[in-house]
Length: 361
Ligand SMILES: Cc1ncc(COP(=O)(O)O)c(C=O)c1O
Image (tube, rainbow, N blue to C red; front, side, top):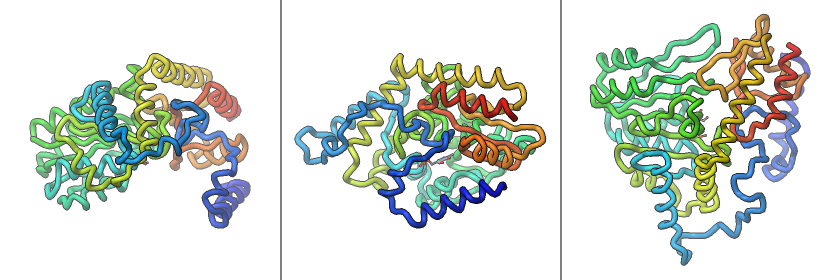
């Protein structure tokens, strides 16, 4: 770690320690962010003069917002081709918890030992018996590999769970064969929950991996990570039971209608010609970047997660140089590689700046 990088980290901690929220939010981040949320602060799915206070209505309001929410969720389930689609204002975390509460309460569940903490929390809250499973590790990229159907079959022959949670895509953009895994789950009568937190763009573009939304029993997606949503908007899709009762147990009775409204318009945008074109443009711009960089190695199943490595540099060194010298912040780094996250708000200009920096390596 360079002295400048160390200084920046100390400065960041000093800012966090001494500032309150209001001050910290007014402070402009000067870095070029390839992180979540990917809207880059500039993407307006809703009108930029949208008034949050005016939209902050309650259940007693004469307009019956609950009915409107019911209708919006129904329309969303038609768009996604699911049995139920629920709007979440507490992230994928709440969707994972609600899906486990819905299908695996007091039952046996298989979870990846290094999964996002919400998997274990969900299993604990639902009083499940937890069976942990391991994943293969790809040493040349420093990333875990999603399970293959044959591995799942093997796991089920040793332990008979009632449900399993699979993370696909992984943080770095590696994707599981969800169709193959679902077949194994059906054969063994196991409910399949897919944590697709990082794959919310998939249902809207054929050039991206196939989404689990129509295949799995439950699929959870964060709109705020890649799909232009604001933190922490997300979706829970079910082709099994209605998760509404579980959501009632963990959600507030005073939902944020402004936030719920952004979810509705986010989905409408993704499903519109304009939205689909912006995903295509994003992919085209990343393809251009990849084609013009023959000094850098790329990996992964999802092009929107720019997972790179450079011969002679560790992932941490690559990340530090991008940060210190080129003012570019990545989403995640390991000992071998670095991942720069892109989403609906990642403009051509932003990618050009990244390309220019990477060309100099
Ligand atoms: C794989 C995975 N699942 C679930 C979550 C939780 O998502 P959220 O922040 O939307 O609650 C995360 C968050 O980083 C994640 O990486």
